[in-house]
Length: 396
Image (cartoon, rainbow, N blue to C red):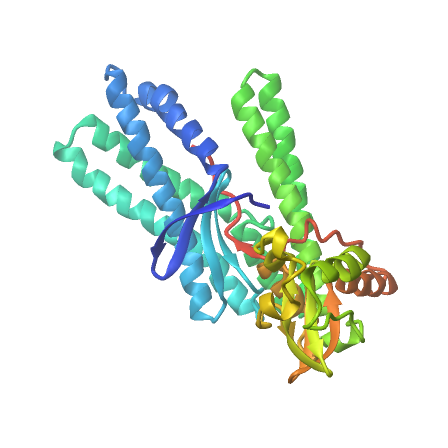
């Protein structure tokens, strides 16, 4: 869903970063506030003051979004849910969870924590506004009034019961508690989210027709994002429910291709890489797994040394990112592949290599299982394994 994320700082133990798309939002909000909003409500100030107000208010808005996501992250950590990071992107921000809540109550409290944080920030800004109204200048009053109102808008907008907004997650927790089925609850709340996305798209088209091109396009894009995120979230749950509890030994390929440690790198390239097209091979001798050798290891070696260097000289120890236990849950394997970008993992018992499992193996099993269950088709390109808690953030 996101592109490259740039880490900025740590807050309460969580890494905070920005997606490059966030720069578009930063420029848009600063420009809208400096040219449109503040001059309309506070006339007769200089352009320099308007732009200063715009920059400070935009920074305050992004700080507010971070605090909203921090609310999610702190409660998630309280319930033992790992958080990858907090990321700002073009539609606001997300606290990225690595696992879904296991109980409806946990889902509820993690979801509602963000709006509560926004209400609190808005209330604090309102108190500061009351104090500043006595003696502070117009710029200070204007910025505080904006931050107080926008935080309330953030909280209310995110409470709309449309998945994946916070309100949609609260609705899902209630449906989940009622029926006891996460899949059913996600299907209903995602359908509502998809409908809400269509409504935003139609609103955007209407705004464009009446002449508000920028505002209309913004609502149109938000609607597309909500609809896409709702569909992807349901597919993500289908994936998790289908793979959870399946041991990897049921999916692995036994007797995998392995290279001996004594051959040269040149021979390995000719006899193994060109023939089997893998990017990583186990190194095995007398049935014992010695290590792994990858394309990355080979590329670090000068080409003129390929014929004189053996595999044992450049192989690396197999780590938890490349070697797994045969009883490991298939969903955990898929999450590991997502985190490490390794789509081919070794399955080991002690020092013995018993098989290899690939992303293709997982997808093949998933396709057959969902087909037998007559479930909806799943496209893993859209079923992102990193769970985003927080949804959209209202624009300025």
